[in-house]
Length: 113
Length: 360
Image (tube, rainbow over the protein chains, first blue to last red):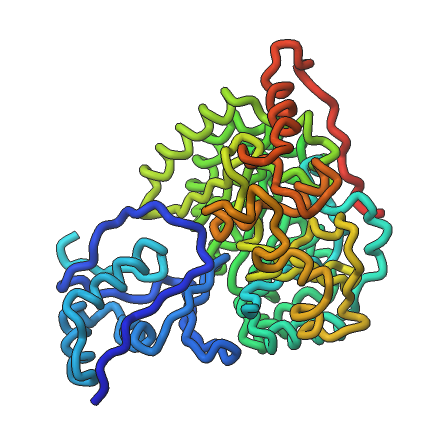
């Protein structure tokens, strides 16, 4: 089992106004409609494609997003990644997802609206 | 040198509209020998191999290309995220359904103002109602919709109503872009440049709308660089992230770069990979080595990349100078004078606009 590599994000997006708040453990994240998770052969990196924006990820980021189906909670995703990687740094997944919510790549199903 | 993320495919410069703020080149006649479907297929394939992930289909009006559906399908098959930038004239339900089936990912529709009379006056033809109808079709077919509005002196006062319209049509994004002065817009600059008071009012409206629409509409506001302290980070750096292919196959770092005195590079004579890496039009201002002072030693040089080369050329005759909109530029007085004139009490109320022709 390997340690999870640090989650890397580079984006071509314009700077955004932070809004919607932090992701918490009970949120059920999913890729926003119209966002495509795919792989760039040239860069050998997973990428998110949106209107006017490309977000370049690494393996860890893509692994998290592959679990974001709108049903699993953040806590469940962290647990599943914990079973796959030796260590998942505390709060990293939440921080990563919060960044993508701000960029409108990820939306949250929230039980208590 | 990085791989480009985006390809701006300018399929044609023909257009049903005649907007005076158009950034298409003045010499439209030089672009009438348009690439064939097969040549576009080659461009898209080579772009994908070079690392391009997004393809923006623009013009002119891309719907005037009879092979647009085929071009979209090709881009989709190559795995590119496709984005249609259109006036919506010609975006009938039947055409929209064909494009949907071909895999088009996203549609951007331009409007010129929030209501028919003004929008049609700026566009030069009756078009507003068709645009609103087309936007409804875009939403019905479950595409993400961006509403694009180029802002200038004759419509910026309507920005609140424009935002209300965007909300009403169900836009996912709205891009409010202050005019960039290239091509026809450069020619019409003095008539288009808004006053400081207009801009300040608009900014308050935009800020409030952003807050109000936060969870529904992504509001993008492109600042007018003549009024900025520092230049825009043009294209994220010269030939760094994007490339443009013009209707006749010329390859450029951005559409305005055709105006610079650099040797042409064409997809008709050279492979895209070579052009991106080696053609003088790409290498001329790549990175920071070309920079003069005050850019060279400026701590913002990796932030705004010296601003826009085309603007530097227009305003000083030398593309390698600091963008004069920068307050640190030795040529800043040129811009300050234009801004002063736009705000002067003696400015005539209505300067005449030269419409761009529909075709060469």
